[in-house]
Amino acid sequence: MKMFRNLFPIFVLCALVSCSDKGPKFVIEGKISDATDSTMLYLEKRELSQTTLLDSIKPGTKGEFKFKGTSTPYPEFYVLRLNGQVINLVIDSTETIKVNASEKNFGTEYNVEGSEANLQLKAITLAQYKASQALDELQRKFSNKEVNEQEYFSQIQTIASEYKDTALKIIFADTKNPASYFALFQKVKGYLFFDPYDKSDYKPFAAVATAWDLNYPDSPRAKHLHDYTLNAIKVRRQSEKQPFDINNANEIDAAKYYNIELPDVNGTPVNLTSLKGKVVLLDFTVYQSEKSPEHNIVLNKLYNKFKPDFEIYQVSFDTDVHFWKNSAANIPWVAVHENKSLNSDLISKFNVQALPSLLLINRNGEIVKRLLPGENIESEIQKLL
Picture 1: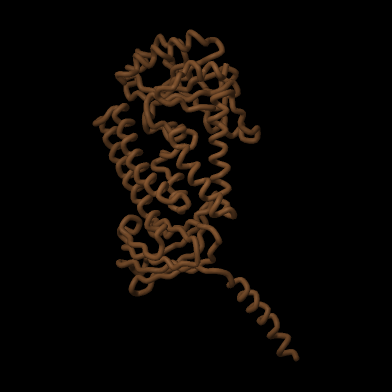
Picture 2: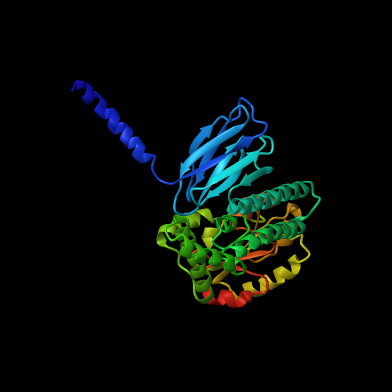
């Protein structure tokens, strides 16, 4: 009897393990052609708010590896990581995905079998990698003064367009494709190429959000994309009619995140939040551009018409500080300079992809609209006054 009592906990443990091992499974397997004894491969899960390490393995003598995991009834994204390089994968069933790669070029030169969605995901990843390489080269040219600020942003537009062309073909070929969701949220060097607050980018967000609502109603990503897109619509539509008030819970964090404090021509730091209570036109620009004089003439007319309830906070990215100081000496609005020029984190934080780039801020200090080329700036300001 005592013997059976001792066996009972083991029986319960086995039963629990057996129960926990139930459920649909997926397999990710393959080979790393030039794996060594020190090679370590990691499997991670990309969740909405974090990336979680699931497992790790040393490839076999021939470089073979195999991971198993529990499937969900909706698509989920995973990452194979090796020496800082990653392969993005999506699992949307109990499928088996085969990945063959080399250790040297793990993240860019790999073959994937068993899933059409993963082939599309690879196309997005390679387009992203190409954009990243192009931006690195552009940054090098700018640092070496081979291109000026205007040329820099003009080439960024070209790089962005190439990425978006690849992404849009995949998105509108199948909006429920997990690769379509993945494409919308990819960043390169801090640049978010698809912006739901931009009217021209709204359509792909809305199309993918609708498809995921219908096909994956239980997916947390479907709800996130739904809410994200609806909020963008709300901001855009209300900013066209009246100031948009963000939730009070987010107001303090947003104010801190989007605040700017830079020196004016006298070297005195000027804080963007100090202008709260006025409608503010936030202008990112360069004075060395051929368009700058004409641009400042337009701003001057707006400033004189709407002051004192209106202010302009103009951020210069000019590399020639002395040129900027001489040009801005008689500017009546707030003119400040970013000495990091285009290496500033303001570029990615405000998703600046062209110069000049204009954003409207309401009296509460909230960004309510990105002004697009050709829009009537005067009428947009009047809506907020």
